[in-house]
Image 1 (tube, rainbow, N blue to C red):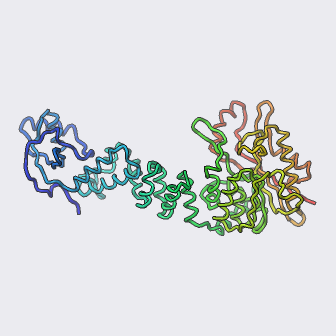
Image 2 (tube, one colour; image 1 turned 180 degrees about the vertical axis):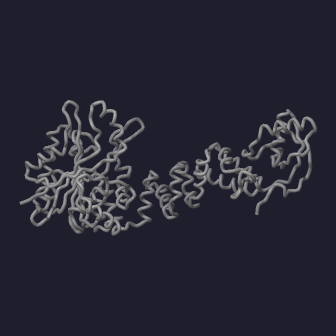
Image 3 (tube, helix red, strand yellow; image 1 turned 120 degrees about the horizontal axis):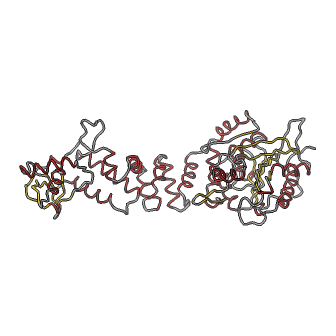
Length: 505
């Protein structure tokens, strides 16, 4: 039921000093022309209707008569006739809420809470426009008016207010943390289910996650179970379009969510380079890119290997698609993150997940073995020290000499040739080594294409180039190279090359 200040019975009319009158709401706009007209009228015939105030200690809070008050101030008067009403609990609360809203110590969560309560009180007092009002009959303040009093745009005001829709317990849990001041993240969290909100809050307050986005990914994965049967059906459709040039987009699929559990971990992120305030992390292979080759060249139950796993896209995708997995990486943090994600979120058995914190070139753990893997797919570092993945001197990213790099890659391919199963073109049995490579420019030394270098090595050791697939890159970081490319008359590189090698008898 809508209440108004008119329901309160006046107790007295007195001359109140203007300096003791407080305008309890900062939302009462005034019309300067109206104030001027009133001032002229008051000066000529006096004040016909007194203002209304309520008394709080030595102060008087204005309930009605803003234009009349401003007219008296304009005339330089010291006092004004006022009807003093009994104190109204809603007015008392409104005063308290407004005092809190101007506090610089408010978190975004508290600000949203106070704004919502502020609007509720104004509605009860008949001071806020209600649904159904139009510009002809509107008597209360609109959202735009309210936003203006808070020094916000209407859009920002509405966004801020939505934070109050967070689960109450989540508000309480996060309100004592630094995350309570990040409006963008809190607004994003409002859109999630109560279960996801609670899990995000738990991860953040326990310190298991130090970043909001990371906590959100983990929470979604825990609350919304992966349906790998549906994902397999989606991915099988890609095989019906085996083009020589492919592009993979999107980051909201179950596979993408799974891979982000590792790639977005702070411990696994490595900065590639920076431009001012922009930082470019080392890129990860798109999960659908990985899934394409795994689906095309292997079946469920097969063993796939990635000998330079990095943040484990091939391993994670393989586990999700029902393959046995062998992985190598020089970073124990990467491997532990991959192991955890695989065992928690895919159906792979622990015995089928074999990870080696070891050198993926020498592959000493498989010395003397032959023809044991159905598919090898890996992504070696770019040549000539273009990327940095860690401090281990065995890492190919540390090699600055092209011949030394190629020698290491040849050693790796010789070992892989021994370990991958034999293919038969007549029987249409294919067990490839898929290697994704790029290129590098070296000024007067020209363009060094890794695809060419690897093809020469493969031919020398008896591997057959079976296919070549170009994948189109869609990276925001490419824009930083445009001016350099134009200056040197280069094209802007927007692709990488996947080389597919087979071992025949």
